[in-house]
Amino acid sequence: MLFLDLIQRLDLDDFDTSSQSLLLELDRNGEGVEFAFQRPGAKSGQENNLLSMYRREVAAIPRMDRQEEFGFCMGVEFLWMRLKLARAASGFSEDEIHRYPGVDDLKCTTCPSGRERFCLGCAPVDLAGELRARLRARTQEFVAARNELMERHLFIVFRLLERYRYSGVPMEDLVQEANFSLFKAVQGFDFKRGVRFKTYAGYWVLQAFLTAIYNQSRTVRVPAYI
Image (cartoon, rainbow, N blue to C red; front, side):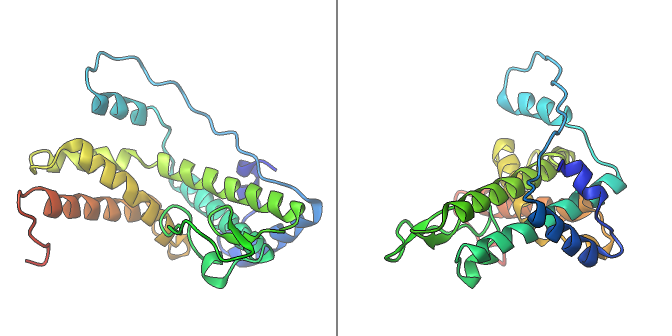
């Protein structure tokens, strides 16, 4: 099933019921989720630095209106639910089942005896091939949808960047910190509250700018609370 067709099946007013019925249907039919996002090519330019080239690439990414945004967020939440079910079936611990990819990934390099690192968690070594393939597919589906949602909102970073141009921190560093903050925005966003994702993401981007300025603008680091 195409991702864009999937989100048409989800109901914003009754998300829990519609998502549960769709989860059962996809599992019963053994269907995966496919993606076909359009990406127009960026216009050529005469920029002589990487930041300007990156800004031009971001400007070429299509933006979302309110309806598209809510539909996309429902789709990401649906795939997150589907990934958690696959993790539970693969023998992940309770903490690992709810560990959000991209922000709360495990940093360990070794696993207990009889287990191995697999798809952002710790699974039994003898995990059945069918479960292994399903877990890998569910992880890839969620990451693809989450990354697309983040990329569609990279324009927020440059929209808010100009006010901190003379903050004493290289703009490239500010952009990098702000881009990472979008992971936290996706993780904490709740579309059921009726707030647009770009509004919520803008808050996290601003916090990333301020934190980077507090930590990097002085030769001697002064904690933010001082």
